[in-house]
Each structure stands twice: as C-alpha cells, then as structure tokens.
Length: 337
Image (cartoon, rainbow, N blue to C red):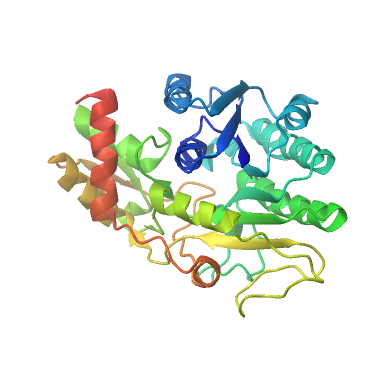
C-alpha cells in the first residue's frame, strides 16, 4: 500500500506519515513548506521522516497548476490523506488571501488530481471551527453548520462541500473529519500550548483569552492518528452498496461520502490546561486575562458517537498525560529556553 500525504511537514501530517511508515506503507509527502510558522521545524519533521527509505518528500504547493497531478500520475497512491492547509483562526483576519489560495484553489487542484487518478479512499481534514456560531452542544456532525466565524472556517466548510460533489460525480470514497484542538509532540508554534510553554520558560506573562473560562475538547496527537488510520480502513460505501452504521451516521444518500468528528467529547477549561502545563514544567505562569478575540468561540465539544460507531474507540489521553509528553519533546528539541 502506498499513501500520499499532503502537508507532511505539518504537525498532523508528520505524525500520520510516521504512523503509516511504521505500518509498512510507502509514503509520498507533499508539502510547500510555507513560512506561516518556523520553516526550520517543518524541515526537522521532514528530516525525521526521511530516515525511512520508504518516504519520499516532494516540495511543492497545491496551488501550483499541475504539481500534484504530476505526482499522482507517477506515484499512483492507494490512499490520499489531505492535511495541507493554511491553518489558524486569527491569521485569517490578517491574510485572507492565503486561505483562498491554499484552502480553495489548492484543494480544487487536489480534487482534480484524484479525479484523474482515482484512489481507494480520500481522507480530507476539516476543523471544529466549521461549527462556528452553533450554540448546541455537543457539536454533532448532523448539525447545520451555516455560521462560520472566520474565513478559515468558511474555507473548510467549502472543502467539505467540494469533496462531497466530487465523491458524487466521480465515485471516489471520501471521508472528511473535523479535528478538535490537537496538541502533542512536534506541535504547531502558533497554538496556545506551544506559546504558553515558551513564555512560561522565559518568565514572560501569558495572555489567557476568554479569561480562562473558554473550554476546548483537547485531542492528543496519538489519539487523533489512531482515529485517522482506523477511518482510512472504513471507506464510505457507494449509495447502492451500503447504508448508515447508526443513527449518528452522516453517510450521504447520493455519494460515497461521510463527515466524522475526531474528538473525545470531554471539553476542558483553558485554566485547567494551564494548570496541567504548570505542573509539567514545575513553574507557575503569570496570567493576563483577556476577552475572546474575534472569530474565537467560548466552547468546543465534540459528539463522539459516530467515531465510536465506526472504529469502536475514542480519543482518551488525558491532559495530565499528554501535556507532559509535549513538554518532554519541547525541552529535548529547544532546551530550557
């Protein structure tokens, strides 16, 4: 089996590629190494993957016409995992064009490449931000997601709709999944846990948005990868070949397509996360409480029912285990600075 992973130098793409290589896959990593955050960290992730002779790195951007099409024609992967994107909720207020190019134009190019070279299963990353202003909790995949609060969220909702249309037209089995606040070793420097760790070690105050009361459904990276790999083995059937697995299923009636949350359904207050980080670092944080910035929500809370129905298990690593694992990696990679 051969897999193509877009965004292989990213946090989640790197972790997924490592897992696939360990399972015996050949992996082609496709990544443009954008400068949104530290390119050195991205190159270190790629170098980590390159220790396997079954990994090939392709440095190119999805927005470049024909770039992925050429790779797909040569590699002919069995599975495609699409994790490349312009990420970040707040950055979409600064550079909206980056989201249009990477998340809309780039994704359209990916769909065309898969159309030309069909695969056994296309797996597409979305986000819990897609739920936007939804006030009903927990967030269920069957909820109407029509109130995105940022262009980032809107672009990912568009990706879900685009993927469904191609699944219908060209019969490529497709699973889209919405991530919930992923953290862990090799994480993203723009995420709160990474920022807080750096500032606490430097003796600098941390800005706590939502005044510590905001809640997030934290998902440890290993749990997330477990779920993605398990879902890759459950491609949605054609409408004429199978039906929903349960009442929670989002299986389309007109396409081999479904949407799945990946989250444990156990939201935690941000101040509790900071407490776990302080314990792992052995240092106290100086907290500066601030209101939520535009585009942020007070709570994310996944309904895990469909994920459980499909793969039989859920993300379960507690912060008290996951945060020390991140801190150990951080100190090994950066040192006590």
